[in-house]
View 1 (tube, one colour):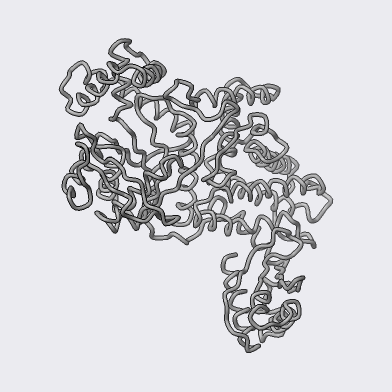
View 2 (view 1 turned 60 degrees about the vertical axis):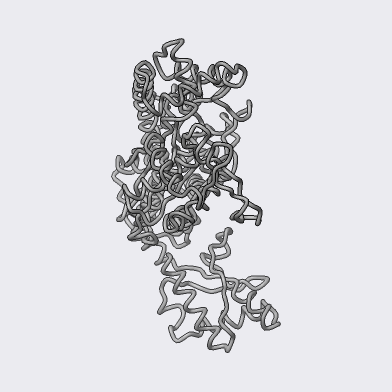
Length: 574
């Protein structure tokens, strides 16, 4: 379909040349209203502004030139049925029945390969996301990053890129020292105990000067590894945390290629800062800072923040560790592009980091792209692990899964299958709620809406796929074949929407926008369910029934591929 867009663009360019009109930039797009064609262009509207001609009349002239081309429209162009002009000056292109029948055939033949593209072929891309901190629980902020990062990774992989998934974890720093301080008093047994240690210590750090001094001292001991008791607690807590995180990754469908830790990047970053002291960094009150006010911010023309890179204890801060991480990542995998997905609360920090990278590693700065995401909020508002009111992924999944379990409890599932389906539905509900928004926006998670089967939810997509499979199974039981020999005369909305899938995937990958896939799949599911309601798909007496079954199979393949790109579980029964 992307090839057809190019053909249309070439035809238009040739036509306006024949009409002695100057070449100009114009748009070829897919109309939201399918009745307005499969493609539309604004070329007449653009040229009308330049020439002073009426856009509708100009559109008619261009359309007539296209129809009268030497290619004998439409017979020599079986992909193009007709061209229409619409107010105020759009030119609409309608594709042929033969084209859609052939496209349905490709959907069936290619299976999960349909929709794959080449816009990122040969690219080596590293995607960093999730980034939980050991000694703390895996909360909904990490879930946001994981959901968006995994989908983006799959999207760009589908377009031919070699993708390496990266998780960066804060295994040193003040949060660790706080956890260890409380753990020395109350030995933790599991990750929940460690999270309570952190919450307790975080409050003491703010309220008790003695506790603050003790925690700062522990922080130094963690770095220099000089205390055996602290070392033992640290090692046990770190190991427990990493094992715990892997159980979450498995549930969410993520497998990382590389893991990086602040204990490693901090040392590298510290040396880079020290090597550039007096050139890029300067001393200030015992610390080492980067004076960002000297530089323009990426947006708005205001100065960047001044940030501390080494604190007064000589220890690397978040910024120094990030600087070291950029170097470590490239040494591990010489990428052409590094995408970093974090919460938008660190956008200011990251702008400073990008400027420092430009000054020390200009090539890496050009290759680094920061994609910030918003927050997931419940009725209680933003969550905080500092106060101990963090909403963990496990607690959210448990709550959603409990409701999902009630919905599938009436099915003829055994306990094991009901558990698996409820898990898949819960994950689909949560991921859909996150991915349906553009990545930078906050999410208000509505439990009831997230599990609705009426539309605009992950379970709605999953159920639509299950419905299509059920139709296919029934047809096989009744021995009705699936073939493309006798397509229906009219082109259905379902066919028109299905054929847009490769272009939507390519655009979503180019823009790092999984929300485009979510919107597309929701509209596609609606088209299929409408088709299912008004068409008798299985009818032994209808010669078009095998084609309708082929169309159902095509829908099934595309829906499965789309859900997989979103990392939403695909289930066979529901």
